Length: 196
Image (cartoon, rainbow, N blue to C red; front, side, top):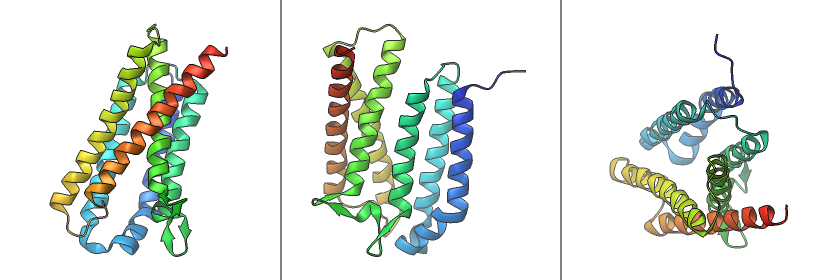
């Protein structure tokens, strides 16, 4: 019998959590804020998220992932859930602004920051020297993942009327937030490793 890894437990827990969120919260709140006309958008996002979960599990399940990496990833999941479920003045937190910046952009920045730290950890585990080139590759990788997400949102704008994606400006600001977050992540990693 194959022994369960930390990543197995983490992904099963979050898969079940996401499924329960979909059943008990996401669906109703999606209808509340976006209407029934674009419910296909909800199912599209849910399918993509489960596909990514399966790919990550298949590719990385043999790696012993340290707890702090799992905690960082869980933080990205929870700030996303908060954006969807927490209401401020009758609006989702995702639409709320802090110092004129939408919460959504903070989520993109934090996710990119954590994404860059995870990638740097994977590079270090595979004995790559974390120099300027690897840092540049990390930023480009995070931006590439972010661009794939924006492409998926673009598909929604072409196929679902009254979607909740936003404008071209929203998409570009998401990418700006991604580069900001990934750059801060690189800076944090370099500072931490130099101070060891």
